[in-house]
Length: 233
Ligand code: APR
Image (cartoon, rainbow, N blue to C red; front, side, top):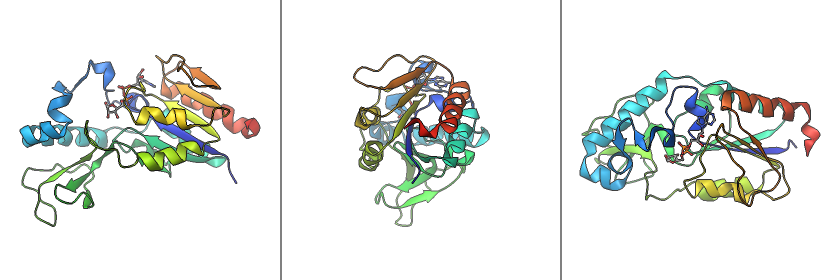
């Protein structure tokens, strides 16, 4: 049985691929305010604007590529049972080759019905139009968890975090809950790594090694160390 590594990732792991992080850009996404493009109220106010915003992000995500950080996590699968829990809505982990990826905040490449949330459609980088409908005749919306909406995958993510033998956090400001709380579900006595050029110690987290590096440098460093000594446990 391979030891289980749980990896919580945020926008920072995709930064070197060319996707802007949220909080480094002063809280604006491509010059839009969060409340206008990433809330249910914003959608009700201006579906065209929200749809344009996600069409642009969907197109951009398809034009970039996984970086050394994403690729190093794939190498971990040689000796570890790797579960990635990501706050990112791009599919760079999957395109790098990671096999177990749980998206907490949805996925850009998917849209869903506005009358039946179980009707989810894979659209890749296709541009969606207002007027595109689900099989029940309702407008399609981005399959994204907007601010103020529930995070359906959080229960599964918590169970995964509780079972970790090693916990890694990469490229997240740990400011958005419930995602940020997952680190606290990891057992106190297991090794934990925080990889982020601006990282500081996290209060109340034991056994934490902070690697103040960009993901493209820090993740391969930690992965190489873990692969050399899986008996770390
Ligand atoms: N490598 C690693 N980390 C980086 C890099 C890099 N090259 N560049 C920036 N970072 C770090 C920043 O220091 C910051 O801590 O990535 C983090 C990005 O934080 P945020 O922009 O807040 O992104 P994230 O934590 O993923 O946001 C969480 O909030 O915006 C909403 O729903 C959205 O999923 C998102 C959630």
